[in-house]
View 1 (cartoon, helix red, strand yellow):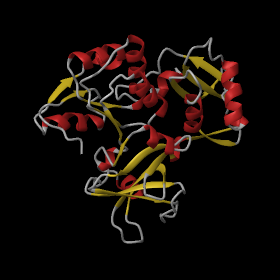
View 2 (view 1 turned 180 degrees about the vertical axis):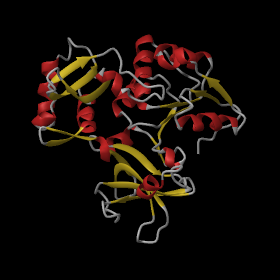
View 3 (view 1 turned 45 degrees about the horizontal axis):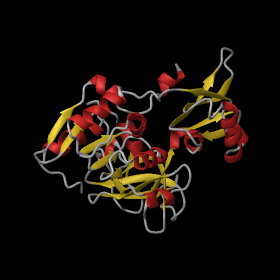
View 4 (view 1 turned 90 degrees about the horizontal axis):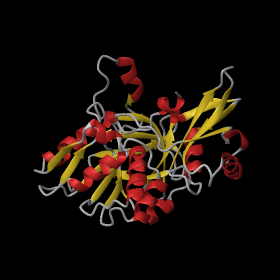
Length: 324
């Protein structure tokens, strides 16, 4: 599907403990391409990494959205262009449409196709494929990101809590079946039984992902967050991803996260972390704008400003570092 060949140069950006690295390793090597192993310094410094992409003339780049957002910021600030790059593949986290739009607006790699892929370790890395365009992003409702359609060797169904398929437009849990689904967890029979199931409709063994999605009338899938991505605060169930999507939609915000934090007395509250100019978008304006878009119990009480969001060795948002 990627059309990889011996002319391609990929990067091994992610930790070997992260399933994305399996894709990065074998993607080029199976087709005679070259693999550039990214050292720790470059993997944690987006400006150094951007310069490496230029120097090595990388053609296929795989990125977790949190790391990609930092890369876009540095490349835009430094005027870096990547003319050799022909494809960017996203995975590991929910896509951040605002960062994709910034990438396009800056013309960082004008000939590169951007592809969003949803996947899970238990299904051998990737499940769906979605080439991105401005029109595709416009189809997604706020807080939802396009993940496209299943890869040819897999099937995806969206199901309710009883395991029954849901109608188009209704949110449901992503169930995956097919050749990529693993046998289960080693020496964890109870966990395996809870996640790997045979539905009553006789459609065969499925993996229950714990992720939510919505399908449109044509079968296109839109990721809607984790089942366990909710928190409870003062009696309200809150989806942090919905708050983060609203934060990213604010003008001048190039990165956003939200956590439940506690003060010295144990009092819990919502705290937003923004990559934005404090003078152009003060905390009072953030809260005022969010109050128009969200219920009052979902408006963060605190706003912190960062130069960039911290990421783990896997390239994902490091929520523990934010809370420290």
